[in-house]
Length: 357
Image 1 (cartoon, rainbow, N blue to C red):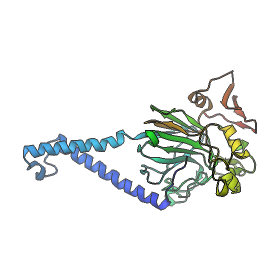
Image 2: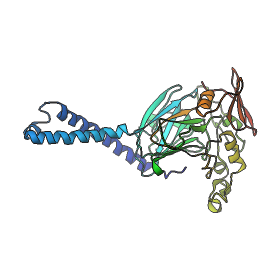
Image 3: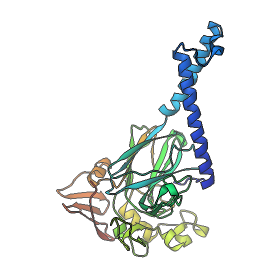
Image 4: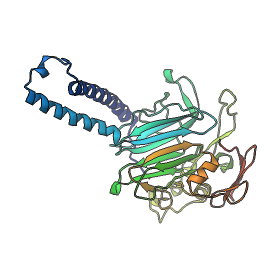
């Protein structure tokens, strides 16, 4: 699923306008509540000098205006971002062109914590997790080893993720009133993400995501290793921290589905996109992977989980436990749970993982 993404400058301007709009809305709401439900002389003699008829008409007008302002929040979609990783992540958020701005474009989310945001029902855009960040965001010197938006701050301010990064993409209230959502590996991968719709109707309203740690199984030519250690012993130099897409790694039009390869017929899946698809069948593996990777729902709220626990993810995706200690994550991908970790075999590569808790 593609979004026409805004420039950094335009994103910052929209965030300033939204801050002013939120302040005005809050002030107007409080102002009218005082008029409606009190006999206070505030805001002065002007209102109370009106005849009783005009006072009643004004109160009715202000009441419906208040309801209109309140409905903007009531009709918003709730997005709950949950961090099940063993380390802090820094979610980044980017709105599409002509999409209403969000209350934030980035923040810190500690391990085990969650945060709920209200998204306009007409919003489209993407979100992701920045990882292994360091530096002082107050001084504009924050940098992240993966998913960095190069803002130097907690807020991305209209900038997108620098690949590779796993993306959760949304178009709310699109065609036929449906929400369209997907998890995309088109720009590469940095950590597992799960999307779970709640309370929706219409469409299939199915959870989707990429549930396995691809980094340790990533082909060498796509693997991104930490060029430096990330303080506090969290990751050492040379540790695999992300997995590039073939397009990002090689810049070949055949992998990027560009130039003379810009149609589904001329850009079939490559051996590299098949690697991603094998590990994460519900996620976008390359540009024309729509049929098995885009999901729909209507009027839903959403939970986005970073590093989802394997067994919880399986239950949400409708899988069942077939035998003790063995969980079928995806086609031809099995996770064997052990006390110290998990072993994942995709048929293409094998790696040892630690199950999220």
